[in-house]
Image 1 (spheres, rainbow, N blue to C red):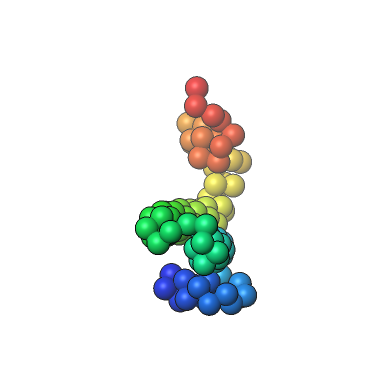
Image 2 (tube, rainbow, N blue to C red; image 1 turned 90 degrees about the vertical axis):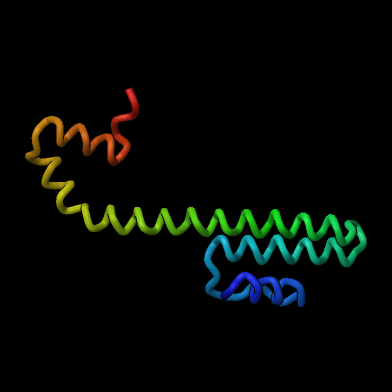
Length: 108
């Protein structure tokens, strides 16, 4: 779903749509709460607009980071066989690079 479609569902009080990514779920829930808060009169139009802009910005960043995570996971899956070979018989520097890559060797 697009952010506009998610917003429309949240604004209409629809239930949480199926098959949303985690960032999309958070966007829906934040917008649903924002619309309920606005309708209840707890915040004004200007404040609601400012908060909506922050929510959308946060959603865009979360979606960006989710994409990076997914790309990294795919890369690691493609490299797994080669990394196992390095672990078994690579040179010392290759094994050190592998430990840095997979997080076993923290910055010295």
